[in-house]
Length: 485
Ligand code: NAD
Image (cartoon, rainbow, N blue to C red; front, side, top):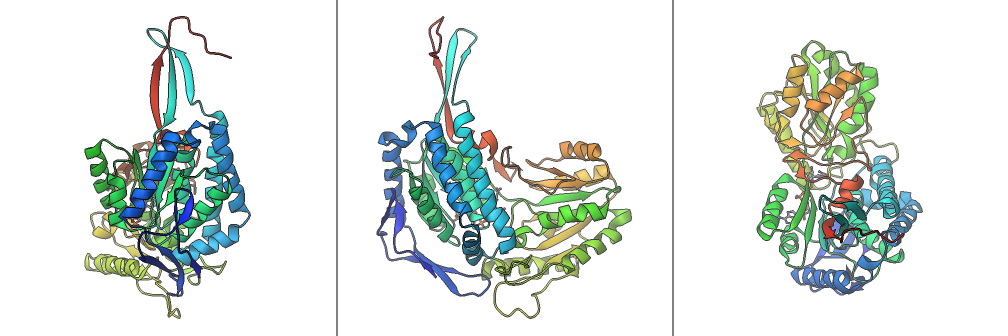
């Protein structure tokens, strides 16, 4: 049991404004594994005031980017020193299989931290150039006080995806993690404090939606960086629009894997499957719609069913487990509700559909494959956020592209074919922010990542991810100006 009785506000562990707490339950054992104070509106006000003061008067924005990058590199190193412990902590919060967690929940954050640490020395924050009328200096400056709001599904990864570029820019941050996963958020605060982050630069305020709304609307916040559902994203985007606040949104997805007629299933399935049911299906980028050519539909569904049958479901702390429990009872109810909806709509369960046998504790759902799915069905249009796949037939390549694009979302996707050039041509026709062609890698941390359509606004990762936290200022200079060496 990991317990905190203080909140990290303004760089100090302080008494919370109320006695309200958040209890964290293991999704596998349903036992209490952690408790933290629940931040209230008064705690948010205090955190924003500290971030404002640290931005306006503190050393952080005035340090060099390389100095700020060195702090990020130290955090990466500290995470590497306890990969297993951190993976287990996150698994206890939200149920991710530790085998997957070690890579995506822990190793990936170190890669992101190191990438932005490196940009501290290489990124052009200042550029002097000849403008049309005379010399100009274009200076990229920190955006100010950032509100970072994240969901529970890849909590440390998503926090690091925001905090690394935000902190590198010289901005200060009020970070509101999801109430399901406050423990790794507090750990990140500890690691940043140990790495030498100056006081006031970061506050961590675990809380729910209403307190989050107060943070979004706070006049002391210059920029909101949000990851979560499209429903919440619309509200946050509207609130930021009303206040002309900078905002970036990473939202939901319903991505399609297209298996073209010339696909070699033995090569493609090992790339598709880990991306279809990753993180127990609780991933924004999951390939939850599998598009199969009508003349190979039976063969492909049979192969998928066999691949799903082979998955090891069980204790997420066991290194052999591939599918663990869903984050909460409420999430299991939601996923089971969609399984019922799919059947009512006329789709057939080819495997799964219930709860795994022999497991009497934890919020488990069997990995499930639906066949005879039409893309207009709710199970093909709505984000289920569980281990549920829909296999949808198509007539030809143009039909596959049409079906893949027939979605309000546009986050990720993939095409699998014997001809990579043909795959790239398909990729160009798909309206999503990231795509895989005969590849199993959905995100490259040095390249832009984000959504078309209802999947978001803006791009994280790469230099784009840093630009989200920079304001650009053009300084016009006198004729003949030469920058000092
Ligand atoms: P959610 O939108 O309910 O909550 C996400 C976070 O926002 C939580 O911290 C929550 O407390 C807070 N929040 C909710 N409403 C808010 C509001 N009006 N104002 C301020 N804060 C608010 O999402 P969830 O169900 O926890 O997470 C799953 C969703 O996140 C899925 O839709 C998934 O696709 C999406 N997601 C997207 C990405 C991406 O990079 N695009 C990554 C991971 C998850």
